[in-house]
Image 1 (cartoon, rainbow over the protein chains, first blue to last red):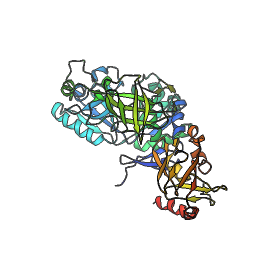
Image 2 (spheres, each protein chain N blue to C red; image 1 turned 135 degrees about the vertical axis):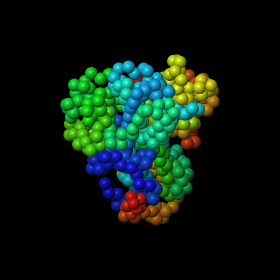
Image 3 (cartoon, one colour; image 1 turned 60 degrees about the horizontal axis):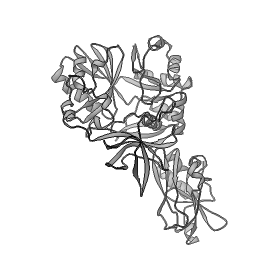
Image 4 (tube, rainbow over the protein chains, first blue to last red; image 1 turned 90 degrees about the vertical axis):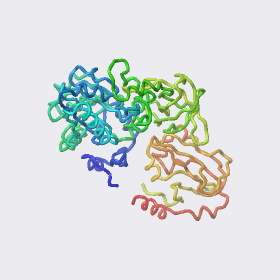
Length: 360
Length: 129
């Protein structure tokens, strides 16, 4: 199969990236040392090619009401223009179709950003639901847009240096808020646990933007560091930490599911009928070794499984997210099966690290 | 970095150095460390363990992945490099200096039969295509 390429493919190769097949996309895993790239983002800033992610615009009268039904989180929480909300989109049986971010731009326009690997499935699902619930809406896949994430404590200043015309509109943005600056859509969001922006822009402009950022001192960061940064920040990865076969309530996403309001949404009845028996917790390995996805976790209350595991460059220890029986408590010691050994790990409340330092 | 001509190599990307005392030092090649990326953990065999040729006997883990290390020939483990416990990144910075373990081979002729640097380079080149 021919791998898909983002508009920055040639730029990655010219910058010495090691390229890998990431869900059918030819993407940079690192440009040298993944650990150095990780620290670069925690301590200064770096840029990520996230053009493989998909921007979807939902437009028309009644778009808010449609999203109220479509998503597990409540679009009514968004009252300030530009404000963003993280949510799951569920099947009727409660399984997670995808996790996504919606941006409230105005009462006739919400922007949605979805994962690369699920984008086509997501859009088909949204359109199917719209046909039933709100046929007047347009659901448009913005394949004309590119996206670059600039993350780290100095990220915003670097973006303003490169795009001074966006500064006035974006200086006052709160965390999880975006501004539409004409060709540039600038959101104070990210997937690293650091401050920064995600910038959506026309595809034909992205290479110039990338090189201008680099010239301003922003190095490129690969998917390898993106994964350790998000894991330290305690952010879920679709396909690993949750998918269509698990409930968001067993995936650490309870805070994104609004069960308090009277509002009905797709999957709500199933969630209420199937109370969770498992939960997602953080693990820190006490012994030497590296936690990895799918390793079995033995607890006093039964067996669980690691969903994401790696080495944390910030903590200099191995960390993981694991789905375990709900009776497991923070502070418990559990045993993880690694090859022919059982290694001790402590159950912790995540995030593990954000804003440059350990949060344990 | 080219592969030193005084070493022997395996198709599974170990290098083997014949020491003056008749033991062998074993590590992983430049190509292997580059594929794996930043090393964060090394698990060596116990000293005294008897190894068969091509037996899985050690593990290196990078941030990205775990990889098995195989005994290049049959023999007995005589020493392990415990410096790598706290500094596994030496495998990245100095792959041909960062030996993992030493062994006494059962049969010196087995060592002579391993690949030389040119034959190993051909293996690496063939993997790139």
